[in-house]
Amino acid sequence: MSKKESNLKNMLLALFAITLIASASLGGIYQLTKEPIEAARLEKKNNAIRQVIPEFENTPTAETYKKAVDGDTLYFYPGRKDGELVGTAVESFSNQGFSGEIRIMVGILPGGIIDDVAVLYHEETPGLGDKMQRNKSDWGMQFQDVDPESFDLQVKKDGGDVDAITAATISSRAFCDAVKRAYEAYVNIENK
Amino acid sequence: MNQLANFTKGFIRENPVFALFLGLCPTLGVTTTAINGMGMGLATTFVLLMANIVVALIKDFIPDKVRIPSFIVIIASFVTIVELTMQAYLPSLFDALGLFIPLIVVNCLVLGRAEAFASKNNLLSSAIDGLGMGLGFTFALTLLGAVREILGSGSIFGLKFIEGDGILIFVLSPGAFIALGYLIMIMNKFKKKEA
Image (cartoon, rainbow over all chains, first blue to last red; front, side):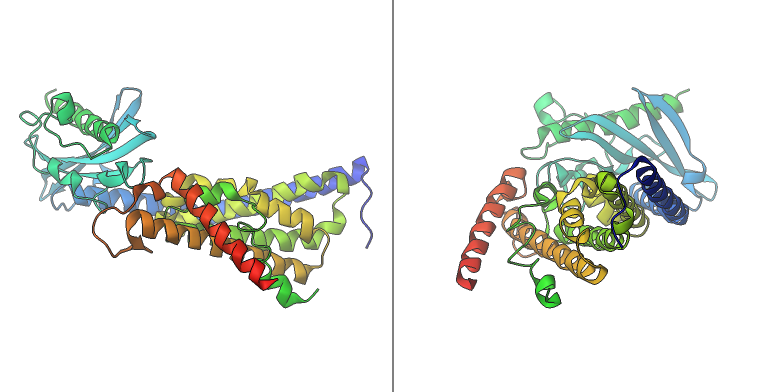
């Protein structure tokens, strides 16, 4: 078969047909993958929550409440066992990372003690700033079981109590910033 | 054309990265580990194969003047399919490759094969060309990723074999250029012997 001539009618028809088929198939794929994508996101969130607060029996993601801070939103996921609050996982953020946004999950016990922290999302330098991830290094362990009232959530360079990641002070600062934001918002809500 | 030669040309002789120098942006960007390079390579292979097949099928219906926009729409559709599927079923790989998946659209390798090969050849040759080129690209990315991971992190496919960090610069961007440069040098030596 010979090539179609490049006149207006042929060009319009060809482009129309191609875009129509493309958008129809994308719509179909979107419908198919919508639920698994949601499930994968929720699973990731649930894993982080399980990591930062003690064992719970409810579904914290179903009891979410949120608070708008500094142009973004903090999400709170309360974990309960036998009706008692065992801890609250706070999804916090910082925009002061070395390459953009950092999102972390901070687990806070009812007494205001930080139980543990987990990283949800970051774009820090591989090999340096990404040591904040627990599977890369133990750096995040120093936030376990600390009371921010006596433990200053700043890197030592800024007069705080946190050991910065070697050669990644900016990433460490941003991490502290996010932890601090979560804690302050939590205390703020509790004291109301 | 001999189909076997058509398939194998993508590995050394016309390797997209080492010989044609196409698609260097994702090559340098994602190859911090071998597994990332491999994932990116396989995603590109899928897009390349499907785009080549579709372009070869409909090449006679597309008027010459609108062929580039048509190819781009076809490629972009397959990239979006890969992106959604990966997000749904391989979330951890998606997190690692993130930004680079949508960028397969502008990978000149894919458009280049559609324009230079699939729009002039039949279905079978185009499919084999797409598969061969894609696997050649995967091979190059995995190799580069492995070199950078071994030197930079002291591990291979995530398995650590030395304590500590390795030579950090190989994980960072300059290391990508250095490693790629030396790999191309070695590849060129290979090719000279072959000829």
